[in-house]
Length: 397
Image (cartoon, rainbow, N blue to C red; front, side, top):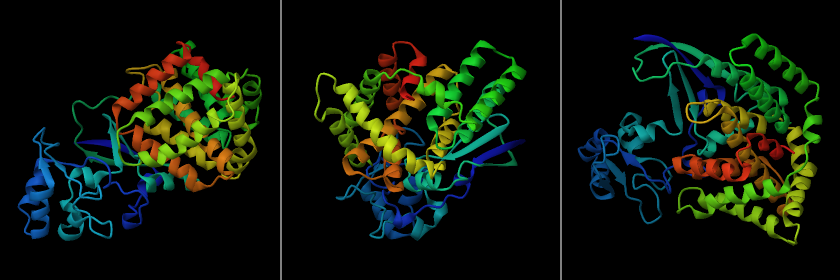
């Protein structure tokens, strides 16, 4: 047994499932697997209805103890254990302790280290996304100490990376609604850290200078001085959208596909020889005239999202990729979300919290539960940036 620190954002610690009120239920459209223990429990349940469903509507696969069986969907493509009120019969008839680990845990997840555990929620859950984006204090970290067994395979916290993570979170907090400025500041921090490895005092001094620049609005000027690269922006968007267009039917695919269709409409409408510049300028105009003023009054929305990504992705995790490469992914996905919002404004003329929540949770549902998606996104980014990580700055213009 060992003492470890448990960290968790406020929106995660306070999370409550929306149950039958959920706008896009997690028991629909996804493969739901049971472990061996849960499957045997249902097959031997004294509750006849549960026993019959387990026998008739669950396919035994025996791939592993954790992936022992898979639920068969009913004619409505819904888990057979769900009742007509969109509630789980296992939970209702056998109690919450009878839920399989997959069902009991979602949307909760955690990352364990030798000395700490970071808890979070996955944003493929619309209620989790709503809680993150609507509470100004959602990403305030809450910590406490517990005594627990620590796996021998647990990683040791990289203190340099943890310091950069905390600094990046503070930079994004300071940027408020100016998301571009926060991302630019983080890129500057990474470049400084790369050139001055192990120089903690110098890094802290540079971080303080970036904080002052953000607070005084000085970070806007270098971004404004960047030359626009509409071709890079346009090409990257098309490549990232390709993944959504080629996905097999899954939960939330229809919703995100609708927003992608709007973006494609803007990108191809009234196209000419200069269609890339024209379409990107139209998106920029919609963002500047409608989205940015609206977000200025709600600075926590996109700020919380980027802070969540920094925390949830354990940024900068350099075990497989460079810190700048990870920042490029976060920036590219933010640029895709921004463009989907702008396209919706360009076509429908409005913005509201529901639109942003729908875009973010459905995009996460389709891309964040498939390892191939991240690899695809990295591959498309590499093809566009031509091995130049600093080209991410053109996404901030």
